[in-house]
Amino acid sequence: MAARKKSAEQTEILAKARKYLPAGHFGNISLDCVISDGRGGRVRDMAGNEYIDYILGSGPMLVGHAHPEVLAATHARLDRGSTFFAVNDAGVELAETIVQAVPCA
Image (cartoon, rainbow, N blue to C red; front, top):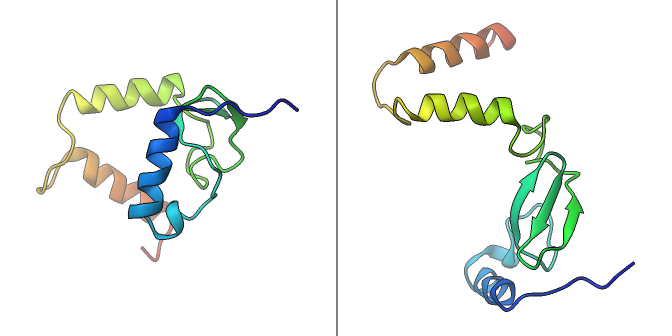
């Protein structure tokens, strides 16, 4: 197995993480790397090293990172706005879906 590459930017962000985050990370894994992007079931750190993402957002991203259908639906919704503190169709539809899946909700 080849040694992982490291970047100066990644080293700087990890130092900040150790300063500002409990235990220096978000709690899922404590790899000495900073993830920059992901596609499907793989992620890449800031130095370009690639990993299989077994965690996938702790479960909610079953289709992987940056799935084209999820991106298209997200972009379509964002064109209409993102957060409303009033009744809106997307919020009511989400509530309905949750109650149908979990009746006690």
